[in-house]
Image (cartoon, rainbow, N blue to C red; front, side, top):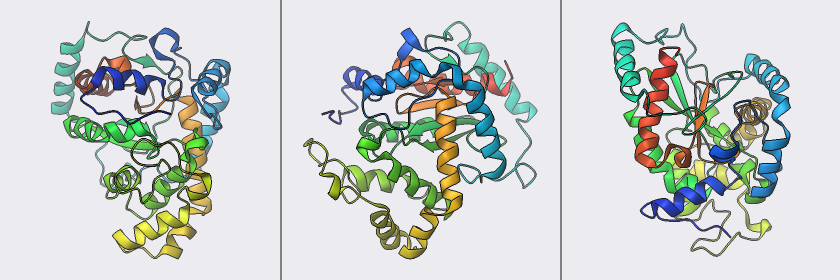
Length: 310
């Protein structure tokens, strides 16, 4: 059983984060997109999927692009031309250049971060540089770090934006239902507003918990939260009609978003959570970056690198 560890125990938590879903880590992080299986039950299965699917990058990219053409944006952001600026301003590019120059020589591809080759689509249609956290509300390490991720998001320069892509590749910890609930909330315009609240309901109050709180392992499967429990949560806290929430959660649109998210996560080569992906071009996590402070700095440097097309 994995335990939720305090943030202050940084070195132990970083090691746990790296092994939660079989993160390949610096020693085996190939640059080509790889496919993490959607039925990964433990670290061994996730690592096996990562190493065995390296040859699937082209089909994954093609499938992702096809889904992107018909699916709503994964985070509900406005499309370019609807009031969103077309890209960084000259002043923002100057800032990006300064950030990029400061980090030259400090960050090494294949060590602190990994190139995604060929580059993949963004998770959303934002015109900004996209820093995407691949996460699950059911992941104890995502919960432990989600306030840290909030701070990374706030520290990003104005030409970059944090987005969130829920994973489903650990069904033995009930991740698919958390993914479905996220996209239902997103469709209803509540994903960002309820982001912290869902973590709290999963790991503090236990209202949406799959784990027994207090480090006592998983609940019996019959007691795992179902989409109806999320519907009642959103009805109670956000005034959503519970039947409407369930209908949206089971809609074709949400099913398509879930399919596209799974394909993108495979194409990005993500095998553990939380993992960050910058503009579909680079990925890293807290362990590869070397810690929380380093991850914050690396996110800004990779965002600058992407903004400058370096």
